[in-house]
Length: 187
Length: 187
DNA sequence: GCGGCAACTGAAACTGTTTTCAGGATAGGC
DNA sequence: GCCTATCCTGAAAACAGTTTCAGTTGCCGC
Image (cartoon, rainbow over the protein chains, first blue to last red):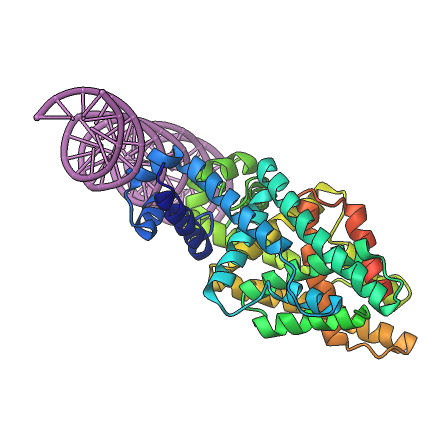
């Protein structure tokens, strides 16, 4: 198995999804971006559906990796703010990741298998946020419910992500909104 | 012009989008749902792209209509809660409308024309929410910024809508989360 | 009654895209 | 050196879906 080709192909898939959405996902475009032939895509992944599925698994894995990483600033509040705000950034790969994830969530409305994957990845992220909220609540003597607060914060970030990706907000405005929400919650 | 046929076709489009997404938008499916021929779709709307565009305009208009309607409960807080929670409901047409709107927002990431339409409709909704927040703030002597609060609340509802549509939350859980957020903001 | 027009039909022709597959290149075991 | 397995190519064949258009029906004005 050539892992080098598979990785290049999966990365090319994520880039194609980020550029054209799942609607515009073309074997020819993926092959071009990966520097391989269309036949190689079929050789490694079977058909278009198999390739798309592998690509979405890849997007989900990367989302879960990001969700598990809690940044290293000193206080729980600072770590929480950093984690939530990391969804919005100027780097092309942050935007590509967010766009691909957004496409996966939209697809999950119609595809139960994708819905399961999205729910799992989202639960991991929300769990991380909940732990940080619980620490921040202890640090500050607040009476917030960490689970309910984690749901509010993660849903808010998903909503803001949609605004950012469609150009209604800049990354800075989205980050400022997250900060305002955290201040409003006393975190 | 046969408005009856056009309306049936546009409603059939929204149903098809709600069932299969924009990816699975088929002329044959729309024609079946509307009880007309494929040729009539071409006669009225030109081609698939023209039909899809008209359908998305229709979805946007209906979203704007819903956004402008502020419900009639007595207090601004109650009206605000009712407006935000109306995004989640058991009626099939509420879910169909939310699903179609979710598809439109996903498409808007890639299509500037759709992004403009989504931004306009979202701004209308956010303006209505901001007015209600301003009234509630006056009623309660709070120091919340109505504009910032309206952004937080509408983005939260969009995030929760995604959770509801993918089965991660029930409509009741989403509504309870909206209520918790309003309580947390003192509204 | 006839002609013109709008609304409409549905399948052949067409298009975009995927799938298939004959064949090449390379590496490694014997 | 030969054989086998793996990785890979790219275009013809196949397929899904859209577009086109010849034709039908109904309505209305003259």
